[in-house]
Amino acid sequence: MRFIKFKAVSAAIVLAGALTACGDAGSDDGGDSGNDASAPEINAADDCDGKFEEGSRMAELADAGTINVGVRFDQPGLGFKGGADKIPAGFDVEMAKLLVADLCIDPDDTGKVNYEETISDNREPYLEAGRVDLVAASYSITDERREKVGQAGPYFLTGQQVLVKSDSDVESIEDLQGEEVCAASGSTSLEHINEEGAVGVPADTYSICAEQVSDGSVPAMSTDGSILLGLAAQYDGELKVVGDPFSEERIGIGYGKDHPEMCQWINDVLQKAYDDGTWAQAFESTLGASGAETPEPPALDSCS
Image 1 (cartoon, helix red, strand yellow):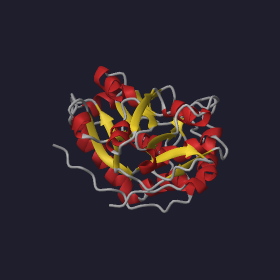
Image 2 (cartoon, helix red, strand yellow):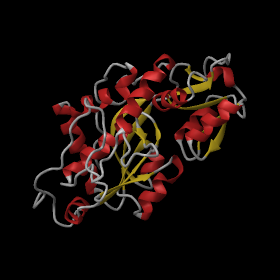
Image 3 (tube, helix red, strand yellow):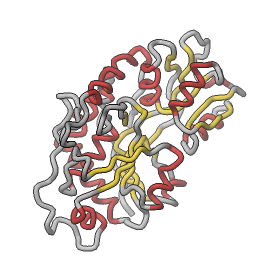
Image 4 (tube, one colour):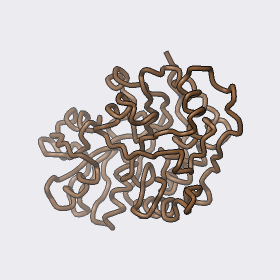
């Protein structure tokens, strides 16, 4: 399964699409997400009475009518929330909305859905503590993480690239041997940086990494190309994405390990979105704003 390589030339387009999706987010009653007109319309299922097995986490959430979802606020195209926005927007957020809606909860109602900002370093702690019920936040599936939490999917494949200043001579990770390269603390990106011979330097968020590249504190940062493209766009031509992808990241949904029944439910909702075209429409209205060709959705891992 091929993954998407994002090119720096499209950065402005991605940011424009992401900000369009966020710019009108939320009406006074919390019922309007403000997504672009081409985004899929995701409405809450009509009736969850008897839909889920009694005692399952899905039944509990549907009965409660409220849910906490961990998403990113700082990644245009994936999960972005501006200062005036009530609801974040992006491809990850669209996947979360599909799940929320299947529980008969309106995904655009901020009185029922708490979209909690979730960064790389707190995704497992938030799930383990029950602070969030689901995580859709550029969450790479790994065996190590699956020892602590549940992960279903993947719903997206991407690859790690490099972000540098526009006047930099760096063309790929190979040009950064022994050099410091920033990535978010707790991310798999740090591991891949070190494996490639550079020196991974952790920061709390990728936004901080981008600031450090901009001010010259570090020569580069590295993570998924989709994330880098949105960050580059925010710097108005000052930064660029370089190099071919040097990893494959399998992005999925996190859930509490105490609720293994959620895995098959998540996969079923994702598979339905694959089959009816909602997944493709969500991609095209978010990450697809870069001009990237809509890929085939990846095969879902079996639940065990």
